Image (cartoon, rainbow over all chains, first blue to last red; front, side, top):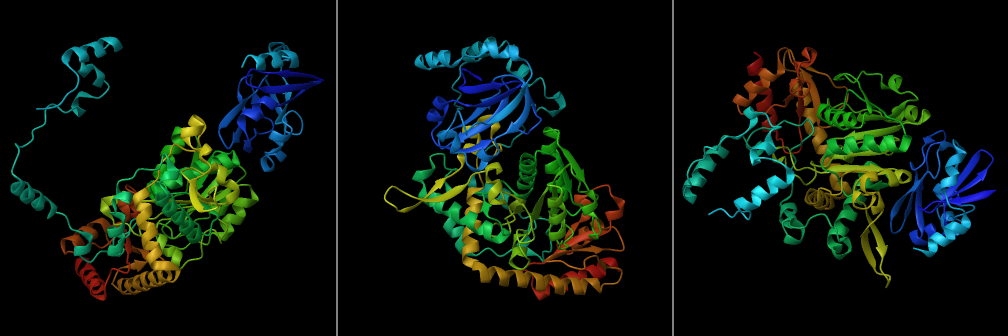
Length: 123
Length: 447
């Protein structure tokens, strides 16, 4: 399964037609302790760049954008009661949502893990 | 000499920059007949002369405390102890704005925390905010909050909701393209609101006591709303009623909003007042307004903070739960002081006096020939059906020095069925003499 990253620090893991979306370890470390997350409705249609979720830490509230277009197929509802999972395992248990991918071509515009690491070096 | 910092050259440079020929062009959107062309003001006068003129103008008013006064409909005349005004005029309270560097103003935060605690207790809810502008804007905010919680867009409004509150909800909803289903005016409390709640409904908004004075059993409405995943918003315009009536929270309401003017605040020509807003803790993230919390500092000492501010517009910007980033601080303080002076037992006693006074008045007015009491239940306000147009009668009573209530036509203009109805309130300020004068005057004007 390939994982892609965005400049806004979201990650996308592709498994067939389904993409799992979350925020990167760098993003969670910048946010600090996450205290709240707002997830979209299942069935919602998202275009690339749309606001998909809101994540709130003790310091700030940030939007999580859809890295690619698709329909929300599932959400990690457990995060609402345990937002700390986003800090503990941002790229695993702390995933946000699953999308039915609309256009796999959009993945080409994202970074792979190596490129993302290089991108972080520049920040 | 007027102090105008900009020279003619400055103004011309600014106009040229934005591409406008003259200052008048900036007002071209305002129809010419609405613009002011020179003000015809009298020349300056001496202080004594100004006092005389203003005194003469003020004497044209009829102060509520100078006559037998039975006006309510959302704003109530209660006795406010002198202590309240004395304390709120301390400059630390009187001159401070909503705290933007909150933690240095521990005194302000402490009274807001106590205000919230009182509101939560009164309404039977888990959390309350630091206040809203007034009851009507609190109601509109509650509807918006319910839409966020349920992700639906349709609010069902009871016909017992104050028409001004309905109008404010309709205004904010129109801006957001939300749906408002307002039931017709319900002076007899006969509406079947349960039948109007469906799977599209985000919230049901019910006022108790209703604007016509009826006490509404909220529990069945809450149960029906919860069956379809909707919220019950309970509205209280006379907060003193909560000293006697079971709290909306205990009856299953999800959000309770209200007008707090009755406690600590004078009528003041209609404002500023203080909106109350309370909700279930599970919905706290979707609440509007400022929230004050209790905490401990690094040394373990009790202190207060503004909490969950990430909901607010100075952090969340356009995604904030509300545009409200302030509160009715001084009115909330007056509420807090008055409520503290009353205490739980005092509030209960005050509520009983209000109810007893209203019962006495309703009984005597109900015996006036041609007058019918519409209520089976009420707190301190009820609706009468007169044999003739109520607005005319209220005018005639006023001419006799009695302010005898609010004709329903003031609130629901153009509805002929309601033209003979009048809302009459009686609080602890009314004496037996006031009531006797009212009954006698009504008999005279109806004869």
